[in-house]
Image (cartoon, rainbow, N blue to C red; front, side, top):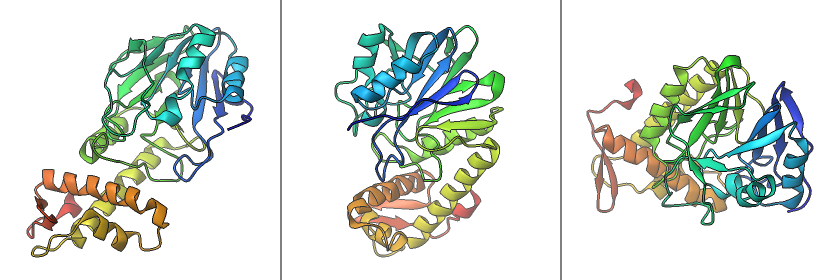
Length: 282
């Protein structure tokens, strides 16, 4: 990876630098945010790319006192160690080691828990634990202006991937409900553009997830077990073959939730539906 985007000001006190890691899973690249004025935090340092880290260090308008990580996926944490050493700033994250996809070398210096406040003098960021995409996921809320730094809990124009074991669909739905209860006006996602009208964005995500959940349930039989792979092919018939395992894992996350809700039954060869269930009402 070479090169990096220039810092873009989203609003007073918030700069965005897009990491040079575009892909079908990351969109235009991972968003790194510089928040603050004389005292700054960098949210999600992104990949370990020299030009990207140079751009982050150069764009900070003041002293970087904290590097905040939303979750320990490599596209969000790859540059954390090098940037922390360069800026002499501690790395903060939720203290939980992931079991699936994770940055093996990521080692935060300080823990952040739900409700903790990162005080940057002119800006205060509230840590919100939002498991779902991953079990360790944090969002950061600038309450004074209604801006949520959402990491991968919300992504622009694409569906967030929920992959067990670290991804949990029930936890994700609960996290969305938690966010809907906050006075969020705009969302700065981990990938993609700034999202206006946050209540509408969150409502659309919830609706989409419920519709997909119903489609998964309707794909099940009461007599013949269905696998996640079989259901994924039905629901995503035109999907690139390279993404089919990811789609099957996403379907599996819905199936696990349906079992938790009593709408499906896990058996040796796959899943069966519970006939008297009606997930449309959840």
